[in-house]
Amino acid sequence: MIVHVHINHEELEELCEADRNGYVVCDNYDNDIEMNLEDIEFDFQDLEEIVDEYLDDIIKILAKYYRKDPKTYKKLTLLHEKSNHESL
Image 1 (cartoon, rainbow, N blue to C red):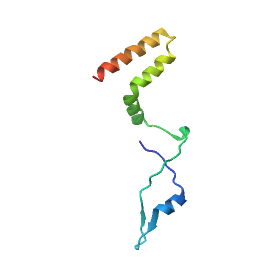
Image 2 (cartoon, rainbow, N blue to C red):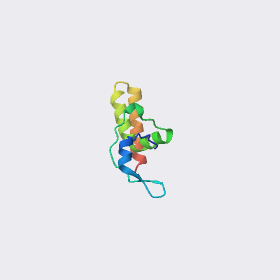
Image 3 (tube, one colour):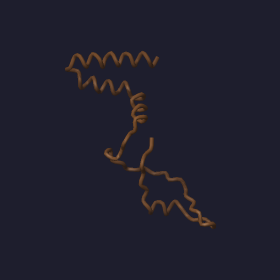
Image 4 (cartoon, rainbow, N blue to C red):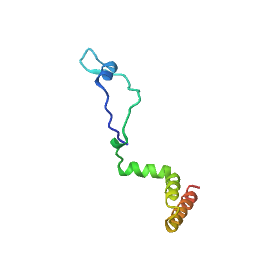
């Protein structure tokens, strides 16, 4: 997953310095980064990995919202059972 990160120039000045040959040498950056949900984009591979990891939770959430629609609820229940059997 590729994430665009903005690092304030003051923080870079603290992390980096020039060596004798004029090359910039930086320490590792280890800090929290605040991101807005609107700024995050997933590509198809990212979404596949997320769904693979959280499929059961996604199905439970969808089933909760479609409980009053018997047709859709039944499909979600069958999908949930199938995903549980495949993980064995």
